[in-house]
Image (cartoon, rainbow, N blue to C red; front, top):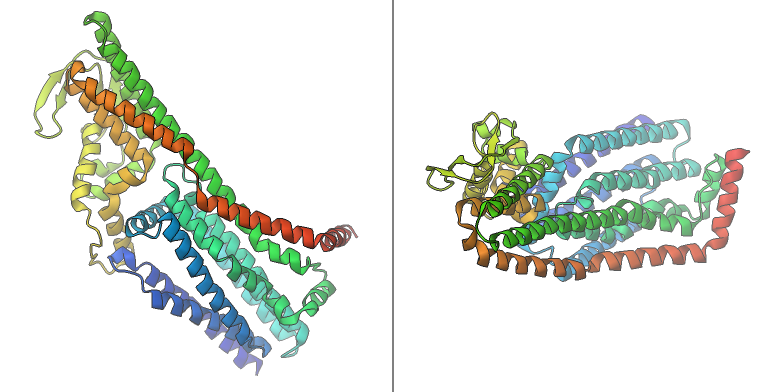
Length: 495
């Protein structure tokens, strides 16, 4: 009897893995230029829940249909909350969705080793849970009340906690990314904020099923659980630590990074404008060349700090010498330099005071950057169908199709492109001809700086207020039980 039930349990585990894989494939349909099916998204989620509770029922003889219906209702409510937040903040618009998917994919590719490590460790933990559940099942009588409680605690409470923790660690790099704006952060925060209710139900399922027997049975084996109110606050506390904290870190770092970029632009343009108003002469020319050298050094610094540039270049030029990855700048202070025109390819001699070279490829990095955006934009097509059947090839083609848009979506590239454009203008035009351009740019920079100072994040404020308020209320209501739990925990540890 137990052998057949064990086989049935393992078959359901494999079926759950299969359904999870199908769900991920459905969600990844956008890589091939197709829209993920909303019906199949909900269908796979419901089927996954059914399999989870069926596997529990096989080992315990308990099948809580009410819990499944409650979780499905929580899922519908979560989608409604996410949709409302997306409508208010705009991250569910097609343009924003493209950006969020692209940045999420790039973040995963950039931190692939970390993601694989977390997934591997989480898989090991889940395998450990399965083995421990089967040990409990075989060591105790079938349908034993205490065994059913222990299995529920492992399968639902502990598994829910470890999965939430793993997901939070995977999304941490995206939330703390200092080079993308708040859209991707808002999307991640909203989806996880709306899912708190479902996490609570899964975490508290053993208590909802067994009531006070749940606490009593686990206390017998030396696991002093906190009260219901404290358990209820765990998903909220996890949300604060794993999502809200990195969210605010990312917002702060992004604004600090963007502020620093704007500061350099403003200072350079202001000082350059002062120089071109000076009387012509050797002193003015020397200062002009020094400013261009300063601009070149900033380009060099920003290029070397941009660890994604080589990846993007390889995506745009997969078969060219430029994809060698050995890109770095070398500057020489000179009074004359030969320079190839970016459009015609003709070589001219200019007195820029700056020579730029890229090792290995022999091409100018400025030309490479311009080629990147020029050819990348030609390749970019909204909703393009990708023919490749291989998942890896689909992802690579997807990244290549959207690669040129990093100038809009990643401030490292938008800033680099601006600096290179400024370098081209300052070395290919008479200084006096740039007066109007510099005036307009300074005005635009002033407006942009002002907009960043007053910009607030509505979603972060709502989430922080709601979650922290709920935690404070729970702690206040269950203050006495918290004090008793802490005393119990201390006495257990040091007895």
